Image 1: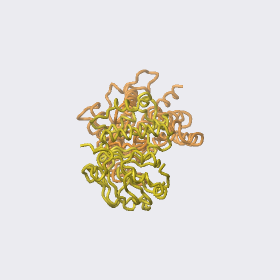
Image 2 (image 1 turned 90 degrees about the horizontal axis):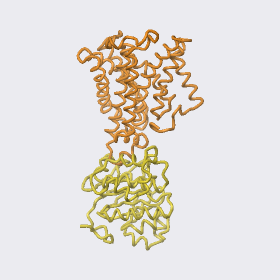
Image 3 (image 1 turned 60 degrees about the vertical axis):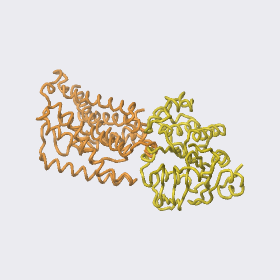
Image 4 (image 1 turned 180 degrees about the vertical axis):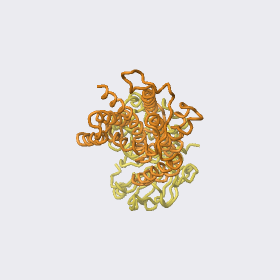
Length: 246
Length: 289
């Protein structure tokens, strides 16, 4: 059943589809009809300048920002305007921008918060994947380094045994070596059959691991295509995402 | 000296009630973001329920059922009235709502049970002083302190070690992220509100055995309880307990020397704390640290 990573997304079963979604912060209109889809076992990256609407897109998909118009479908359900916890319980993991670690809680307590679902991901396995977290179980979240916080932020939703992972800028503020480690984890998620939607400001890294890419600008999708195509077109990336692809 | 001890102990008992109230208020404030002006109302509900049920259940039964009744009514109030207001970030809405609710509960109590004070009978064995010198320390007063300490310890273990408690603590830091991790935050907030009302109801029953029952008993306890939170530090549950005991004892001691100022001293303490340490005694730190 599992598709090879290189196959184009259109042939895969869709696990997530946003259709023409509009979202607002107060009165300002942030998303002007974003449409995107994620196939089973795919890594899809969403690129764009600061303020292009990447984080708002992720929040809208997760049910944290209200979708005023348009539809979101995930894993066979219309989840538009569902509360976040119901979406999470379908099997959707979310790694928020800025990690959002519970700073006054210990590492272990941070991992007790998620509504764990049965599956291959258990506390033991999480500690095997992130040995540093196992070593620092009793430390407070705010005492961890940035990289360790990122690991914890990824570990938490893994306990939901998700089928979809939404990752919002996991490399933000991390040392290059740690970024490599994070990307390796993202890759291994796909190997486990997870579908990953990845928002990144690190364009070369995300294009290197993604199957397909979208570029957002001013709350709209201005480009979509395979990651390989986009990676080869440096000018386009620079123009639309405000970054170089190498 | 004996008079000073007498007043200090009275103040301590009063402080225990403030602390129980402040603890519930602080829980509801930090997770539900509701400034629960009706908290005194739940105290009244607990007390009057216990009074009404005591003839059937006995004192001990009423002591258990009264607070539970207050919690159940709290759950209804949260579900029907407060939950629709969570999506409005301005705390003014729930403040006005619970303020109105406080007035309604007080007047309903007056309508049902009458405006005059009612006595709440505690078992005779508990009413005798433990010694002739310390005549003011009765078995009942020790019971009040003992039960309160046990409940606070229980709450500490609940928040420290249970999954529910850990989620409540996480929710006070970042409710949105808790929700994105699959936790039903509607249920979490409801349980937390009920827990706060349970503490208020318990304070009501315990206070009724010493002060008797009157419809405004809740509103007379609520302002000092808010002061206790501010003195102790918003966000710190230990601070709320400390603040409650501190202002209770301070008011008691003041009664010895200058009774007219016994209430004013509570606000004087708040003023001093706010000037010297604006975040309160234990503010800034998280829950139970």
